[in-house]
Structures are given as structure tokens and as C-alpha cells.
Amino acid sequence: MPVSGIVSRPTYEALAIDPAGRRHLFVADHAFEPDPGVFAALPSEAPVELWRALAEARVGSGAGPRANALARDFRSTTQLLDALAYRLERERVGLRLYAVGLESFVWDVARLARGLGMDSSEYRLSHVGSNRRRVYCVHCRAITENVATNVVACSGCGANLFVRDHFSRRLAAFMGFQIDAEAPGEVPPIEEAFP
Image (cartoon, rainbow, N blue to C red; front, side, top):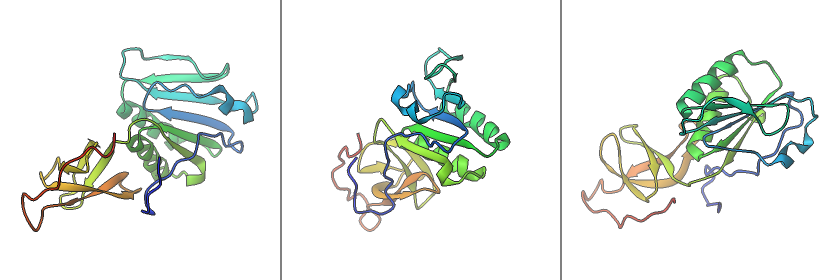
């Protein structure tokens, strides 16, 4: 993903294991199977779990990305995030959390982890998939999901929002400002900007 001049715009590194972790939990918003090479740095006895949010009916537990890993599938990202909150409230020091998926998902995981006491060095974010954005309306504070265009109608107040490159880690969203506040109805051409 190209880096813009906006400092707040997140950048992502390739998924890599933190060898300092005692336990490793991967969470993904899709049917994710890590490359077996990712686990090469881990001692064979290090516990590994893989939690995935799947839209399919196939939900349950099964074999994970390596022989001693546990895979757990959820019906939705909401169900996965609820289970993750429950898990992190009871977790001990030594867990390393890896979030893989759409930008909105990985930042939801980061916000949850921070809120439950994890330091940013204890979790890693890997954005894969669509570049569609979650947009926060600075006027009414509503969130509009899956935005692919440079201008979008706010899901709360209906204002025509210009989607900025400014990203709020606290809100896990890009900022949207009313583009036609001074000249109502004067909106530039709407183009797909975030496929």
C-alpha cells in the first residue's frame, strides 16, 4: 500500500512472530491460514491459536496452522470480538496477539487490546484485503462502513463527506468532513478511491 504524506495514515509490516511471546493468538476476519514459514521462529511447544470469523455455516474447532495449534471459527466478527474481550480480560502476561484482515477489523482488535491493558508491543496488525474505509463524520459522530469512494453520504446526518487520509487510531476510522458546507449541493465528481 503506498504511503501518503499524512503522518496518521497507518502502515503495516508483513506478519511476523514475536519470539518473546509465550502464547500466540491469531485473529482474522476471514478464512485465514498463515504461511507455515511464519511459525519457524517459534519453539515447537509454544501454544498457538487461530480464531477466524467466517460468514459460512462451517463453524467449530479443528486443526490449526500447525500440529499443536487450535483453530476456532466464529459466525461473525462481532462474535469473535466478544470472545476475544472475554479471553483478554482473563489473560496473563506473555500472550502475543496478531490481528489479520480488513483495516477496520484489525483496528477494532487493537482498540480492544489497548482497552484491556495490552501494550502495543504485545499485538501486531496485518492489513489484508480491501482498502475500503470506515469513515467517522466529524459533524454528527456517526460511522459509515465500507466506503470505497472519495465522497460518501454520512450514514447519520446525510452530509456529503470528503474522505480524508487522516486516520484516528482511537476511533479506528478515517475522518470525513462535509464537502459542500459553504455551497450546498456542489460536490466534486465521486470516484472510487479505495477498492
